[in-house]
Length: 449
Ligand code: DMJ
Image 1 (cartoon, helix red, strand yellow):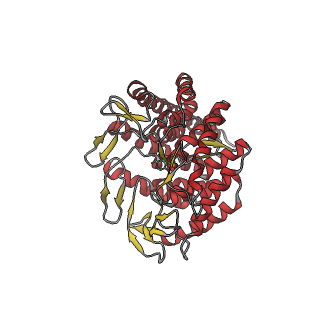
Image 2 (image 1 turned 90 degrees about the horizontal axis):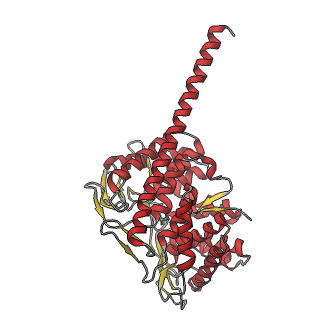
Image 3 (image 1 turned 135 degrees about the vertical axis):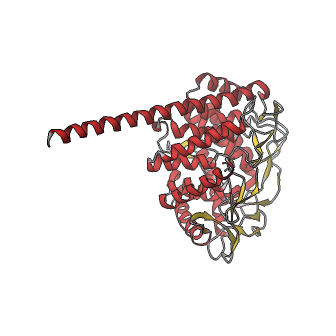
């Protein structure tokens, strides 16, 4: 090699090195900014809502969802604090949970929400700290939730009274019946009692068994009769995390039946729901029995799908769909809950601080290594800070067009939205995606068995 070429190579290596260092410094700065914003919202909860389920960020008060506090925000936020290295906050939260969280309350709770937020949160709290009292709480909760599965079909009832075990409400959907196995299955693995795995697995397979002749799930059915009520099929709310758990339960437990159900389901979804409009890739809403298209709408909940596609190895569709999600976000500067992608108009303009689009950016970044997803995530984070930040925390948007705020900060904002933002910029070694599976509320379950 001549000297000129050698010098050019050295210069190139130095400038690449400098670019790389700049990128790392920038990511580090963003991770610190996200942590500051997490603390801002958490301090709002501490000041105005301590001991309740969550913060009302405009009226600066706490709220309780089910008639008695279940500490939804502290339990949901705890593992985010641990990942962010917020040791003092985590210690204080641990004391609060262990001293005051009780499930012996005469309240009827929604099984699905309590499983993904509280059971999931307690299991990761136990795995990440080694504290046995978190597992005892999880086991107590799991036992109190079990009556939901005592329906004629094995599909869970929607609500259960934590003290009496009385169940109610049978109008349910695949997301609620099929998003339970990561948490109940992990509880079985950690306690050695396989009853939880069996009941949640049955609920998942009973959901799958009701797919149509062309392999699609509908959006609502009756837990007692198993009969479909809503026959739209799509990847949005009411179905979304059912697909997520089919794949993830194979990944977490090595359960081959879950893998088979996933393979068949995603093939049907790609065949009948996939849609392209003006060169952009989407998933439409179709009739579960005929596959005929019903609505060309997509939204904030559907935006989890690029992440799931990437995780399951379909990075091409994942990247194309994430481009569409980004365009949907950029249309108004924040994504709407429901967007008509054919008419390019908002169907429902609410933004409840949802994480899914950032979750997908995180998976795509971690799986492809493409820093474009970090840039994308940075712009989502800046928009959140600009439009949703309040004096006391973060607020939903009632309308993404006007950016009018609404007085609610759901616990998933600290469990998921802030966590995925942080992980997108933080040291990737914090989470090893080969041994960790996030539940649908972003609680990182470690395959420790
Ligand atoms: C969360 O509770 C979970 O991510 C669930 O799967 C969907 N809805 C919210 C976040 O948008």
